[in-house]
Image 1 (spheres, rainbow, N blue to C red):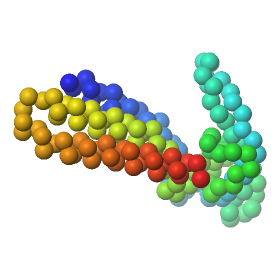
Image 2: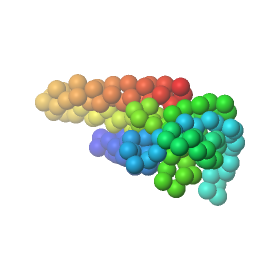
Image 3: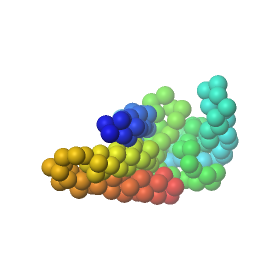
Length: 159
C-alpha cells in the first residue's frame, strides 16, 4: 500500500523542482518587468530525443526604459499574444509574472497532489485499522487542492 504513495509524492516533488526557476522568475523583484509580444512558435526535438516540444519567441519591452529585446516566450502562448512578463537576468527568456505565472507553472505539481491525495484515500480505505478513517477527509482535501490548483493554473496559463 505504501507503494501507492511513492508515485504521487515523486510526481509532485519532481514537478515542483522543475517549475521552480519559472516560479522564481514570476515572483522575483530583481527581474525586470515588461510586456512580451509573441511573434511565433515552432516545434523542436527536445534534448537529443524524438520528443517534440513547443518553443515560442517574441519581443520583450522593458517597462522602465522601453527597450526591446528578442526572447523566448511562454510555450502556451499563441503568435500575437501580449502578456505581462519578467525577463531573466541573462535577457534570453521572459516568463509570466505575478500570481498568474506561479499558478501556470505549478499545474503539473498540482497533478501530483491529486495523485497523492487519491493514493492516501486508497491506503486509508484498505487499511485494517479503523482508527485511520479520520484521515480520509485530509486525504480528500489534498486531492481537492490538487484539482482546484490544476484548474486555476490551466486557466491562468491559457489567458
